[in-house]
Length: 62
Image (cartoon, rainbow, N blue to C red):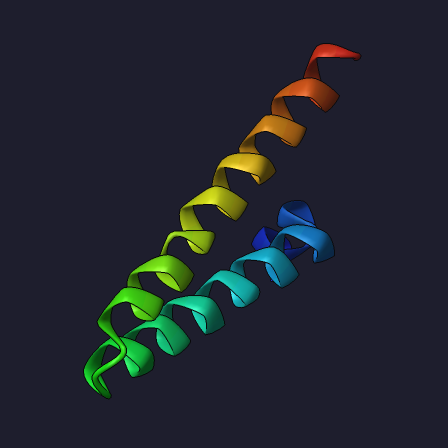
């Protein structure tokens, strides 16, 4: 439980959002909408990269 406390609520929400995006992209891809699935699937790494960037910026200010 201490891990989740240190991890932060915002990070957990972002990771859950990324999981939902990946699952939705898989659904789109497997139902025949390949291009839309690839487009939506690229949102997850973008959000993760943005999350890492925000972490780096906030750690640089300390």
